[in-house]
Length: 495
Image (cartoon, rainbow, N blue to C red):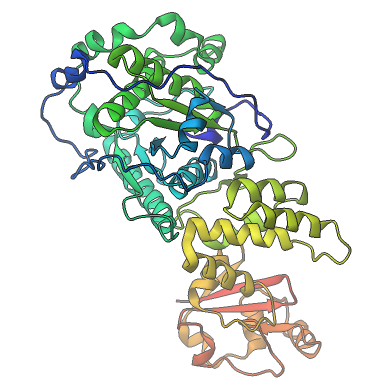
């Protein structure tokens, strides 16, 4: 269930040929298997269970006057494979789909690799379909082997609960803001947790009703399984069953919630097709589809979404909006147009215009990167997060007119040296003395020399005289920002 960025194989971000299994879209036929869930479950409760499981409303009537989401994804290099090209025709006819993407809570936040899944869900939203984010409260206990060389470490119940809450906050914040689009309604997305049904499933009934439809040869032929079996570490039986568990999720969601499309990264193809096949065999039903999108790769073929410090997290508590913004602002020219297509909702005409401008004389460097950073930061962190990132960016530019606040300075504090001083020692201390006390400059003479040259700044304002620190200089009563030139800075925290 882990999304695009978890694969180990480096693939190009170009659209590959569609894998099509041409089958007619047939109506769901009633079957004795439709009631098999009743024999699989018994009542119980747990932390990972959602207190109020969400049931989607009945399908809305078709809305023909809208864009075909499959065409949109293809245009923007967000389509790699689809189980049947009939999905494109069905979308063109105005049929409404319920589409889900799974996110296992293996960390307290999703990261940049997971963002593609949310973006594709949002495109389905914007084209009139219903989006479902499925939190893998159950499957995270097993661990998806796709793209992994080692088995995931086991998570305890407390970690799973904490991670589930964190990921739910991230997804609901992003998709909730997407509802600000005029074309979206308040019920355009829901968040579910597969532990709500897995907690009551009994092993013997599962093997009898579902396991007998799983062909071991087919399961062993899946790429994620084959690579692990060929490795020195091998694969545990627990991991081997993961594709069947994810397939069961699709079956349950199809029968109980009317969800008929599953999306995921290209490394999820095997798990997704396990679900479509299980639905066909157990429920004797057609009209379900799987769709994958390419991995997020840079122009040199390496994975996009990692920094020297680690993953690019989507939760502001794990990575500030400022650092998130800066990551995209520093994207190389060779990658920026591709990422504008994949990671933003800008019109392709506007992106083409930016690409043309980049080739013209007089182009201001990083203009396209700035637009990319603004759009992605706004999508993930909202307008408030974007403004926080912009204020923090200004905080690094001496002489900027933007008034600094404590939050903006804290946004850059991790990247700068800092020094703590008691309030009484800071108040009425000369700026020259504070430069030495904080370690910004080695001596008072060096500070005075820089002051005369106009290179000394307090909270981004040039210091013209050897004045003393006043109460109003301390930003929100908590912090000061001293700068010697454009790059040498120190944060003074008031203790």
